Image 1 (cartoon, rainbow, N blue to C red):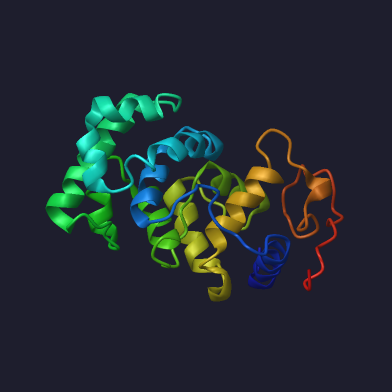
Image 2 (cartoon, rainbow, N blue to C red):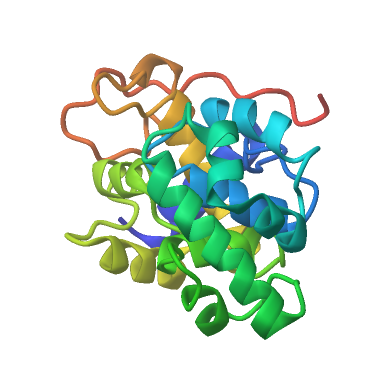
Length: 221
């Protein structure tokens, strides 16, 4: 895939998704960090249901640490792996207070030193909370990048590095959310909705069921 086609793909996705952002509900970097940690192997809908009850009670590291593991678990027990996530969250709160004055750090190394925070989570926080042009690669983005041939790679890191290298600068801030939302609602895992895809003619997926792009919304809308 050449640079012109990649630019056209992003331009169409940006027109189809004019306000790309996370579907996790949050009001601060700490709330976002909490929600992202809870979202592993869980849906954003399920996480939001839990945090709507949790955040009014504890939305700072100090308040969550005061809950303790046993106090936190009832709020998140509907989420998969909630016991290990509770342990990670409480330890994260302790470290945020001890090392960062209760604030979420805006540096990759400091974020990845927190329990349960890997490169993908750090990229999400850096991009969404702090405006860094990072591209976190989850299962949706890995699938879209490989299926369309936008940035094919055998590993998550390989796909990330190619997306960062090949994504036009104008779209690098929004690339993560453009691709994840496209993958979540159109380029689905089991049955991609090619007839509803605005980049059907640009996609290089051999098994696509349509080569006619879906209409784009009016840019003035």
